[in-house]
Image (cartoon, rainbow, N blue to C red; front, side):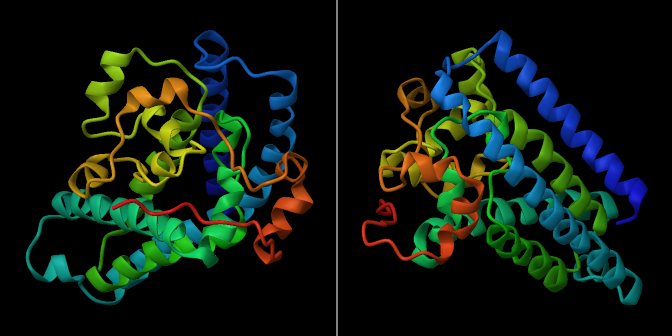
Length: 271
């Protein structure tokens, strides 16, 4: 990615987060306490780390897709699938692989959970939580873009579209905004809404192990991991086994996957 493309991406992220923050002020879901607002500093620090790692990885996937398409026709091209259809199919495949499969695996594997728990340890969820991720998580999710791109020969346009919508919807779904319940229920039939994702950040393991979707909610509905969005209004954020002081420390969060803690637990996976 050249400097111009990086600045364009940074602008999109900044505008999305800025607009989401504005809506948070106008229509908050919850009113944060002064102590809860303290998470913003560490979250913005992790945002810088995440952007430096993830943008290089994720947009490398687009380059890989482009290189493969120039080297030889992809599977769908050989089958005669029109480019527009390839982009749509590619978007759905990548969103399922990157957004649902990679995400659910991080909840099922104790090793991967140690990295992903940094995201779930946030004591209050708002737009700054969007990029509260450990670099290990970025590398893991990257594999779930590159592998389907390589196997199916997905077009670079599908990768770019999925990554762009991930950034935009990521800011909105984490934003501390109150969406009109009937509208939220209607949108969540196919799309991951703010309320739907807030349930995923619950301390309740049954709720934590649901609503894995990134952009489309259809995977959670089909695979029976969907929890109704109404639960968002009573959700309690964070993890019981993470010290509140550590949850707001950048160095502690970056070191967390490498620390062995006896009380550390992975949420039980519900059937």
